Every structure is written in structure tokens, then in C-alpha cells.
Length: 309
Image (cartoon, rainbow, N blue to C red; front, side):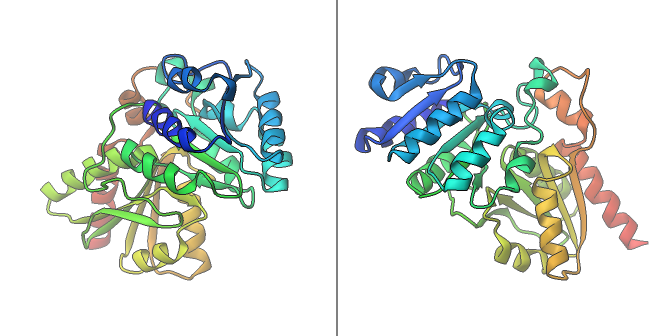
């Protein structure tokens, strides 16, 4: 999605001179279209994410719209206090762009995995968290939210050319998108976990199990009304995310179920262990960490078989 993001940002910057792009000394072979078209509006802040966030806060305070671009964990955890004390406390339109959520930087090791970014940011009031599932939805999400008055975090996949069949670029803040409808189970997926959820739905269909697949791309504000309505129609609910078990999508859905007294059994598929010593392809890591399509399929089958006894 990185190139799709920069292409969209250039398009927006053509008509909005307040848009600036800051990067923490990365994004080479990605950010050049913006840097070359708007050199006066591009800043490479170096490997200094706290300073970069401080710069963006001052820019936003002066009326600009800064987009701050880095790897997901570097964009959120390194400057975390600066995000809280700047854009959040002052409700400024700093747009944080985190690339490679989950284990997409697979061969770089755990220091580059974005497994706690959503959980860390979700506790900050007024900070929108947007997790597009593919490049078309990213375009829609940026178009609809770039000029919102408060801060936002966009969690982007670093993989290019991702397309989620049936999504067709739909996005609304605080909404859910459905790409399959079934009666036996509800699978709720966040962002870059959508392809695995769809694969699982097809695998389940071959086993005679029909599943609804709901994609949540607006984590904050959470799509509470739609979650209540959708969960109320299903007894078995499964959340899938490339994130630690605590703080992300599964925690958010748990809150909705508990706070509204919904009668649903929830199973969370997420990363439950620190993946230290693990490197390899993204697919290999998803399988090792229990968030692959096979893991989803096996868990749904297991739960339904247990319920039928």
C-alpha cells in the first residue's frame, strides 16, 4: 500500500498546499514522487522520531497538515509521549502513517514487528485509528479523512497490489464492511489480516460451514452499533488480527460484547507470545504465531464441533 499512499498524497497535495510529508530517514523508492514534486513540503527528519513528531505538532499548530511516515513500530512507540502531549492533548491534525503492521517486516526480526501499535494508540482519546485492508480502501480512507480536524493513525500494509475481493474500496469511519455472509460463524478481521480471513471463509465453505466475514478498518472510533447488530446475529464470533492478543481488535470486540451484554462466544486469534528468534517469510510467521487461514479454519471447526456435542 505504500506506493498507493504516496500517489494519493501527491494527488491531494496538488489541491491542498497545507499538506506536508515527513519521514524518519526511510521510504526510499517510495516517497520520491512526493519529494520531487513538492521539495519544499518534504522533510527527512532523520532517525529522530520524537523530534519528527514534535516538528509535526508545531506544523499542525501553525495551520499545516503534516503526514508523518515511518515503520509502524517506529511511528508509534518511539514518539509515543510526543503523540500524547502534542496531537492528542491539543487535538491537532497530525496524520501518522505506520507501515508494515504485524509481521510484514518478517526478515528484520521482532524489533521491526508492529504488534502493539494499535493497542498503544487505542487508549488515546480522539485519535482516529484506520487500518485499511487493501490499496483501494486506503485511497477512499485517505480521501475521506485527510482534512479531519484531529489526529489520526493509518496502519498500512507494506505489501503492494493487495486486493480484497468484494470490498471494492468501500470505507466509512466508524463502519464495518462485509465481504461474505453466512450463518454458522462470524469472522471479524482487522486490516492486513483480511486476506487470511477470506481464505478461511472459502476453506470453511468446502467443509459445509458458512461464515460471515466482517472487516473492521475503523478501530477508533469503533463501529459499535454495527458490531452490536452483527454479533447479535451470531453465536460464535472469531477475531483475527496481526497484533498481540491484548489491546487490539479482539480487545475492542470483547468490550462491545461485555458492555452490551451480548450472548456470543468470542475466540480471539492473535499473537500470544513474543516472537523472539523468529524470522522468515510473513506467511511462515503467521503460521508459527497462529494467525494463518488454516489456524482460523481449524479454530472455527473445533468450536462448532465442540458445540454440537
